[in-house]
Image 1: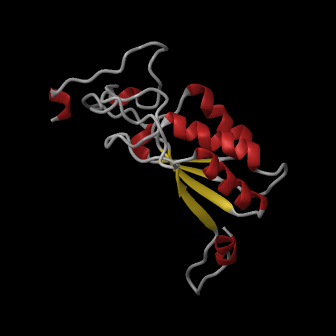
Image 2 (image 1 turned 60 degrees about the horizontal axis):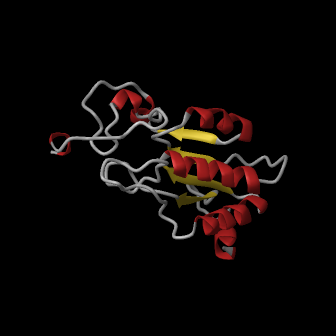
Image 3 (image 1 turned 135 degrees about the horizontal axis):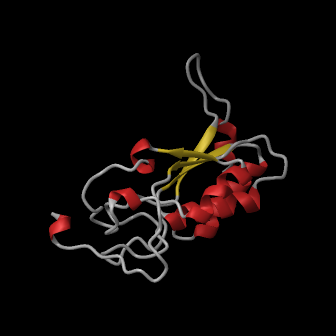
Length: 164
């Protein structure tokens, strides 16, 4: 981690190192997003970090040193873990704005936390819009509901035809 600190502000005439990027999960379509409920294959129920507490420790170390972090987080559980981490580790009054990148599934109760914590929600346009189309094969949710969690207790299903 000290090596990452030493790289900060390194650069040249047209570039500089100003942050550290992490990946807490992968993507929904290949079953590596960290979702709160399994996808239609029973996958996507854990993050990419073998021990999420190690992620929290790494982000905390950098946050206390004043280094901005950007974390790739697609799944609702991954996004929630990143926000929980930032809430616990970013020093009060820190001028550093941390980012969550991509943000494909956002539980409604999580939206307000971005603003309250001063975290930048760096969402890809295709993840935030109501784009008409077929059911998303892996989650079984219509594209228009990608950013809304299923109703409590609702089964997430998909057909074999949707996976072709």
